[in-house]
Length: 252
Ligand SMILES: [Zn+2]
Picture (cartoon, rainbow, N blue to C red):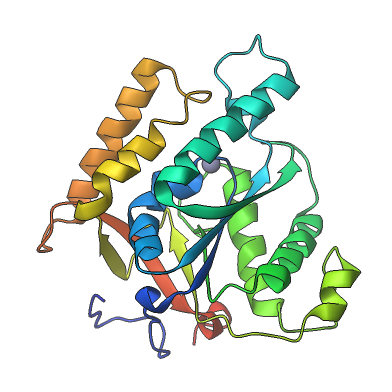
């Protein structure tokens, strides 16, 4: 972990390599992998089970606009499952809210409470909702709803979208929340050993990128991965904000 003099929390930064069950909540089909497939592959190799949950249907990003919504949805799932095989994702879940559309924040939060209570992860990954200059509302809503669901999972009075899950839930510990797409990382994960796997996973997302777009994405990811590893002992990294779950409220 990076030692920070101006650390913004007095709570210990959890060790992500202690993770056994990780829930990764993403706004769109490819965000977990674009942002964190390198570290997630490493964590999976290190015994963690990976569960991916996608909040929106992602239909706006499909490049072939002659496809019906049904065919486009199938293409996205096909790509995601292929990428998931490379990263080692155990299970995928989809909420299907309209991509870049109008949907209720609290409905998303109720669904996330359901999946957190059901899967009982010890770490939760998601997009940093406080990323400055993030213009995509799906990213902000997903990150915030996930943060709240992590904080509120143990509060029985806050209902999820599934009463059966709620009544079976006895509580569990969540060691940490990990934000990707962050401008304030406190940990740079060494992804040198999983870089090739990450790029193979990214290249599965054919429905969302044409060849030129894909090449550009890979080049951008490579430059960014090398930039964030500047000053580290390794060549490529992924920047993360790793927080104790109690650090999600009032700045402690
Ligand atoms: Zn996205």
